Length: 395
Image (cartoon, rainbow, N blue to C red; front, side, top):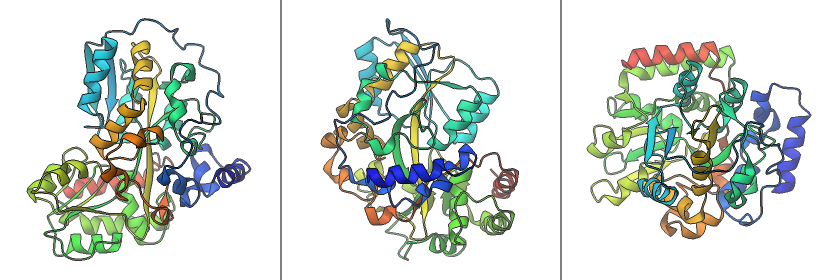
């Protein structure tokens, strides 16, 4: 795999495209090389990422010192195990752990662009990191203060979002797909087309979508056989038609509590992520929850930890970034949030039922239909379509 990944990245480096289009030009977004390796968990657990520490620490990197008594985090909801938060506070004497949430990456960027200050760490999806670097919102990482990065599978390091391993620490990975209550939905839901047809038909009004432009636009773009990163006017014109035709049938856009709607059967179909599945399956009343990686292709995403440029508690931040990748701590993250970990050593401690489940760790065959994202949040046509779609739903 390493040789293939090197070749992919070399081709991309030779292709004269903007940084945000790097992955698309490389062919890495197809998923058949690096992404397949990410799913198997067979990489060397003790090998440090090849490019780790290749970028010099920022001049402003704080010296090692006493851990501050507080940490301010900006993150997705329910994206850290409460057990780990308690363990971190106890280990380092942190008295205040402020956990603020965002519903999507656009909200995260908008808040930073508006001048929000005071946060120490955040968890953007990888393709948004270049924009955060360009905006001066995050700082380079001092890898000497994150020794547990040695446990991260090299396949997740040195990728085009951060080719010199300067700014992002891999957090979790996963897919965007279809969740459904199988005791209610008996029809096949193996593709985006089937999901779309059922949403407009039999299950109209009982469908929820995550409130995330890139994830939702994956559906119509894959339905018409296009890249989920397309910014071609002709493609987006078709996306607009498909989404506006779907809008009257959507119950809600919801990134935070869609699991509750599925649990109550207020919704029985959902375009979403695997996160809620562990908890839903643990309850006999909702154990019928099922998840499909659509056969017509979908999004592979990688979420990351970043250090905010003006972090007021840098020592507490570095303590957290290293702590969260202690293998048993990281395993608790996957057991709690239902997403794949890039930490190979952690796999020894993950619930075997989760580790062997292709919902969370897709097979090599499933990986072939996955595509990574570039940051298209600045494309005005996509923004206009998304706002029109949200307005049509009432969101």
